[in-house]
Length: 512
Image (tube, rainbow, N blue to C red; front, top):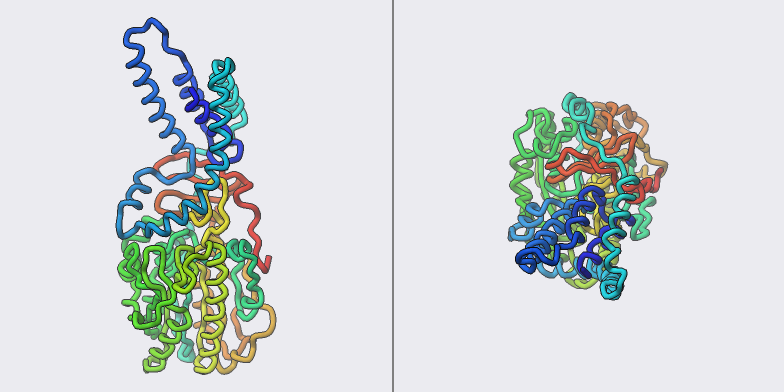
């Protein structure tokens, strides 16, 4: 009896505080099943009681998992048993200590004591009726779920978008694309780190950019396919039309492509996937650089300053008129740890890493100016670190690609003899909802115009985004924003659950 009192108190409590979305009918059925007494004179009552309780525990566990926002059990199991995907034991231990256990025990201890006392009083026989009433109330007040297609014409409209680069004989701009893991507006706010001074140095800022995913591999592939509109994640891992590959399009107008990482690219087959599905060249080998961090899987992470200087030295030896670099950094990943400071809490680690990466980028910009080479620098947030958890997802977990995780900065700046002394002034703000395709559109305009000074920077007139304005996706589910609110759906189901409005308050950044 005490077990079921604890169980149903937990379900009701978590539902009220939006940790789960309890299903009234299924809980009513389970409540009747476990609290309905077995007649005293029934044959083999003891055996039937064991079978009933065992079945109840199984049904309760399955139902509670189903009501939560956790990924499918098989997905989580494959993640934990796959040595190529599983984080280090140190990282898992630190995560459970910092994000889960303390919260569980704060709630669990008084609940167990309360349930123990009640289970030994005369009131225990009324608890079945009490929980039945609770679930009837939940049934009448249950948030509406939606069954059907919330995408509308989103993917159809996105499939029609294509950017084609036009060669300009006067264009001699190098392109440097810096994709930064765990770089999102919500994270800057969470650690109270103001980057306005840094962003004000740029010529363009995208304030409502959607990275469309909360994991690295699909984020990089989406960037490398930015000359076409947003596709489903399944299509990312299949051959696309040649016109969809960013680097292929730039090769067509005379660019020599480079890829560089500040990590080894082994985890989750990162290197192989960006080469196979993004048509990226083999990353440059920078493994001789000084090791400053280890990632959550124990892999090496190198300084962004050293890595970018390594590329700059390589660029000076390349006779090509125009090159394009796609650089990927995991410096900010919450699983990374500085070798000299391995025991920092996640917020402290992130603040230190953010300070260092901004310093490294500023140093790189100084070196770019010294090179006197016309260069377009594009910073793209890969996804957020999810430093601020919520009732449906603990901090640093990114399984549900919420807007706070996928709304990342994009900043574009031009360097060169006629641009290096023009850091002042306000950047051009792009406040409309955008994604990767808008980056390719603007890049195409800059290449076509080949501006010789800031006065010739092209204006912003992007292709209209399809409705709904926000669609993000991971391997297991979608998040969609419509006029009715924010919805989440696991791919194996057809029902969309409303995400509580308290989970995603209006996003704040420095420019909105």
